[in-house]
Length: 444
Ligand code: SDX
Image (tube, rainbow, N blue to C red; front, top):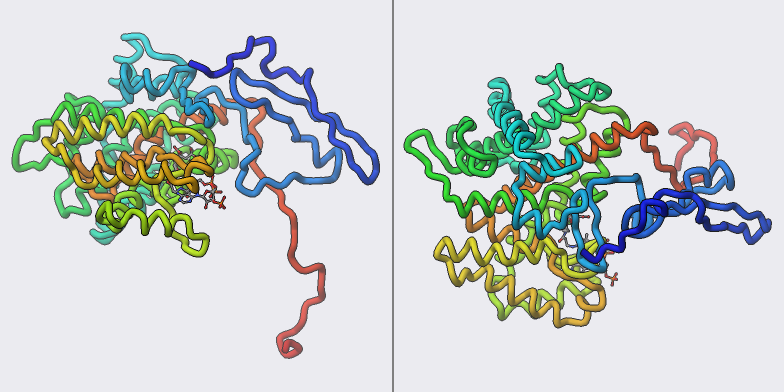
């Protein structure tokens, strides 16, 4: 692990500071610097407006930290991702999604007994209220599954009135368990609904990933045997998507939660944000892009389009706000794609071949090298999910399913902060100066 660890004594101390000077008046303000366990220190500016009468501006938050967090650390230069100090490589090699969920929620890896108890709790919350089946009936069969998920996950707050008190630790815990447990069931229901097939009820004899595959691909007419390699691949994909610091959808959940909205509504807001093709919707867009490129011969034309400032086309699955080196998740997923396709007897999948050719050509092109545009988590995930039988519209749903534990763990960490306040950014106003109302017959 190359993350530069600092002794605890240096953490969170205000002994360091920056001085801000107003060049017009010569006034100076001392801004405290805070340091964490690893990663860049922060300049604490919360008193800046009160002290200076000025706001800061950082429209897409390239230099702004929104919170302190103990969950996930990313080092974009070194390509490091760790959860509560454990590297994503070791977690995908040795852990399971439920164990990583426990780690994110409660802060450490569970003992045998703790994991058994957590597994039992999640298992016994996998069913959804039968009334929710009627919500699905209102959607067109060809509705995008993310549209359905936004609706039905938000609607969970219409059913679980016994776990909406965000100040009660027991209710926070039950809500987290219900969300982690029910996301696979609801996700599978969106898939079944799009196929016109009956919903499959969860089974308590299957583990988390097996149960999800069973609810998606099983049918009442015959027994369904879960392929253990598929289950392991899905569990790995869930681990890789579990949490990722303060990304757009997690920041959406935190901002929604800061108004003290209930956890189900907050997770629904995260689903809505994740759906965007610049974020979690990219895995679907990657497959659609590869289908459009069609063959290796066409790659140069699309590389040129991606570089053309007048063309809105972007190489989907490439680039990342934080990773300016390889996205460690993409590396794990690329290896997993080979393994899953090999186990499926698909040794020369044209889509995977095309993806690898595209990656090679792009990473030899100075436009991508200069901008440090490497493949991200979304570049390979879709190839695996398609090989497992999922349509591309389901890819963001699986991303949301896995990210729910990250969202709810970040939400829980925020609610448990003693200094919780509603998030309320300001602005630089550039609209018209004050002017009198003009009655309609006086307007040109
Ligand atoms: C996820 O934040 C997270 O952690 C997200 C995530 C998570 O786990 O939560 O990791 C999941 O969202 C992964 C990203 C999935 N999105 C895509 O694959 C969509 C394609 N990539 C991009 O649109 C883009 O790279 C972003 C959105 C991922 C990052 O955007 P930034 O950081 O705002 O970068 P930018 O748009 O300012 O681009 C910088 C330069 C620009 O060129 P110049 O103006 O400097 O000449 O790089 C270019 C961009 O035009 N660029 C691309 C490109 N991505 C950036 N050019 C072509 N193809 C691309 N994919």
